Structure formats: C-alpha cells, structure tokens
Image (cartoon, rainbow, N blue to C red; front, top):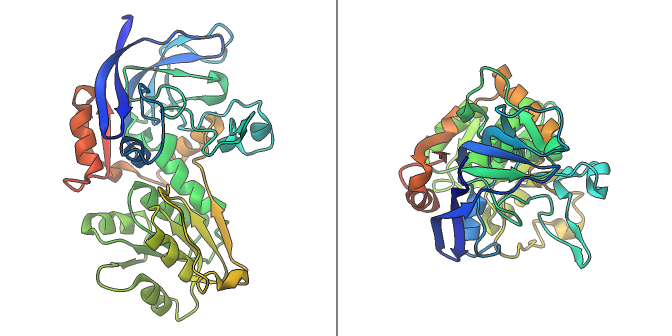
Length: 358
C-alpha cells in the first residue's frame, strides 16, 4: 500500500481540489477501508458554498462503500479484504447518546455545550470518504459487511440518503392508512416517498416540478404528483384530501417555502417531519402554526447510523422492497471529482446522484 492517497480537499468557500494526503494511521479501534465507490451529497454543496462551516484542509464526503484494508489491533469480528459500508453517522456505541438510543447524536455533547449534527464526523470533524482510503473510528460499531449478491451501486444510498429518507418517515410515525405529502423529490425526498409506502401510507402526494423526478416518484410509491409551478401545493393537497389535510408532511428540501407549505398542508394534530438541511433561520407563520394551538408535531431527523441500521437497510435493498438504482444518474472517477461537483452543485443534466469510483 502506498504512503500517499488522493483526497478531495476543502480549501474554503467555493474552493475544493483533488490533492494528496498521507494514508491514515490505524488506531486500535479503527479500520482503514479502501474506497470502491462514494458519492456527493447536498450537504457537501452546503460546505462548498460556505453555508455549513468545516475546517479548511478537510477531506469531505460521508457516503463510503469499500473493502477493509487494515484492522486495528483491538477490532474483532471482521476480516481484511471484506466488502463493507459504514454509515454517514458513526456512533461510538458507548456514549450517553448511544446508550440512550439516540445514536445519531453520539458526540453532540462537548465541554462547551451541545453541537448540531453531533454524530456526523466524516467530512465534518474528521477526514471523509471522497478519497482512496477512509479511516473508520469505532469500527466494531460501524462496519457492516455487504451481503453477497449486492453491488456497490445497490448499497451506495444506504450510508446516508436511504437512511435519512426512511428515517423521516419513521420519525413521523406514519400509520397504516395515513395520507402523506412529501415536499421535493430529490434523492432524500424520493427515499422518504418509498419509506412512507413501506410504513403503510394509503395515499402519498408528492410535490415536484422536474418531470424526470416525478416519474421516479411514481415508481417509489407516489399516488399523486403536484407540480408547484402549475398549482399551489397547499390548495392541491386540500383538493385531493377533500379539505382534510394530510396526516404527515415530510419536508425534504430545506427551504422556508417548502417548510411553510408542509405546515399549511397538515390536518389539525398532524406531523411535520423535517429532513432538509437549512442554511438560514426558519420562520413559523402564526396562522399556519395555529398560534401554537393546533396540536401539531414538528420532528427533525439526523440520518440514523451504526452497523445495525446499515444491516437493516441493506436487507431492505436485498429483499427488493426498495430500489434506489434510478437515483444514480451519473458515474465519474475520483480524478474527475471537480467536474462531478460542478454538475451536481449546479444540478445540470438531470442529475440526481453521482457514483464516484477511485
């Protein structure tokens, strides 16, 4: 194994480069995986734009698929050469948050108070996955073997996009027979649509404008597609539900407009499940919020991680109950990562997700 590796390095707002870094040293509880496929996330674009702060010099990316190159001396139950994924969120398994069942927030507590996105380390507080190699901390809590018969591309959405989208449906506690609206059908919104169907929703309404995404949404389980450029989404939802409103609204874009639409589309006592990453303050309109008296629930979700979560997601993929293949629209090598960022960041060529192979 070489001493150096290629890595996608964040230099500052609007600036990233494919550079060179030392291959990480492996500690007792760590594992080094050789990346065989990864991708770019919308959160990476927030980082690149300077909307979410990370340290200059950090390797970004948090959606790894790979092969175990080296195991730490205290790691057992795995073998070098084994194909694995690890979640975008890497809980330790022993923190207060982990032991309290809130694995996604493992690491949120600091001596100076609570830190948002506490469980997200790759490409946030430690070097990430858009590189030749990735050092995985707390490997025994986070490495999940890929089942035989599943390709890298089939499991690529599991570390983040599928976990987040399904997590939004789970957090909303969708019940059998519910009517659900999903606002925006990007990769996470599409997975939220699939999650609503798996949770037992009887009627799923999606709000989207792009024809390609509308078509995939129907494959994922949408019963109605509302084009917000043609019809006011809230009016359309009230027409479809005969004035009742939806039991659950899932906001999957991270904009004030979609958040407000989702809130206004709820029935009294309904639940707004927020998945979008917001880059500015969100306002609660007094009337839509019913002055705080509408018995509404607003829940937020950070992509559930850990090896058991990843095992469950890959089992769902293997069973055929969810198919994320349509989400991967482009393929690039790591050498072309800057071109891939340009296409994904500017949403060109009907891009949804880009598979990147070192």
